[in-house]
Amino acid sequence: GLTGSFTNIESWRIVSTGSSFGPFAVPVLGEISAGITGEITPSEIRADELRLIDKFSELLGAGALSYNLEDGFALSGNLFLMNDSEGEGYTASFEVDEGVISASGSFNNAMLERVEGLPVDGRVSGNFSVSGSPEAPDVQVAVSLSDGLFNGDRLSVDAAVDLNQEGL
Image (cartoon, rainbow, N blue to C red; front, side, top):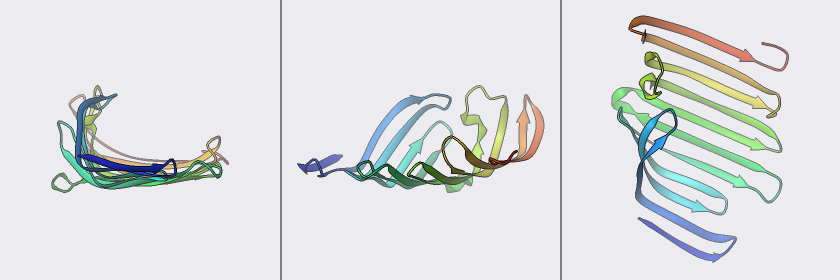
């Protein structure tokens, strides 16, 4: 359920204990349901327990988003979601401060079947990082697909991209 308190615009909170939402449609991914136990305050959204469910699996994890919109613009956060029985997992963290972005993450055994209309099936793993200004970020991505299927044919792919402001 949801509870909360309000003292003034700078002192309030909303607490969620085992709240569930959905199912609702997410573009490209289809219908999902979500559950959350956590808290929202004027400077943070914290999910102590986060649950995402689709037709393929249930992902469990936690995350947080901190923000300061008064003294300039600062934003930071982290997220992890896991399905231990499937070996599937996602992690991400980021920070935006004074126009500079720093973000990184990883994914392990992500199910390509989740992306509707994609002609490739299988599990993909990899990592990414982004840093610099939004106008000219440096980006590194590494992806590996093993035992995949492309229109019914077996497919394995390893790829990496390093895009920095000095060139590809």
